[in-house]
Image (cartoon, rainbow, N blue to C red):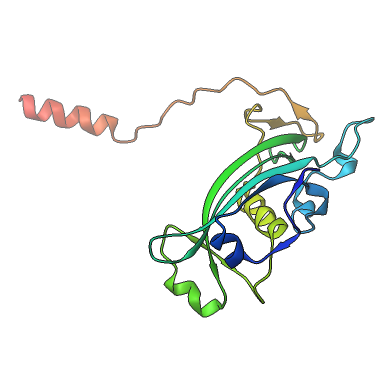
Length: 187
């Protein structure tokens, strides 16, 4: 784990000094994220449960309006369960966000559209919390391995190879009427 950052920071002091924090943190420590990841029992035999690391860079500054801002970049490879095949796969996450710090929930409505608000209490903020939040926002609602197409299931519940698409004939109930109308206009 790379430690170029403290666990807790005062975002105002960081912005005053135009500080940049970067490094990696173990995904294993992100307790809200872990339930969304592929559990150990879904891994193939011999695979070790290693959730890997999240890489991040957080630049603290003030914008033209005087708002305390954080330019955050987060990257991670997370193991999810594909909802098509029910097999684990690795989702590559790369996310950039512009955040602004607020001290009260009431300030949320005054945040400009191009910023996402981050609530800070007692002038303390955990970098792990904002990195975990970005990863949570980046995980798809319905995880699907992009390498797997449509999956057909057989009646015994086993995955069958994808079948060839069947071309269905379109039933056109008014096709005869169109023919009749055409012959009436010709008379």
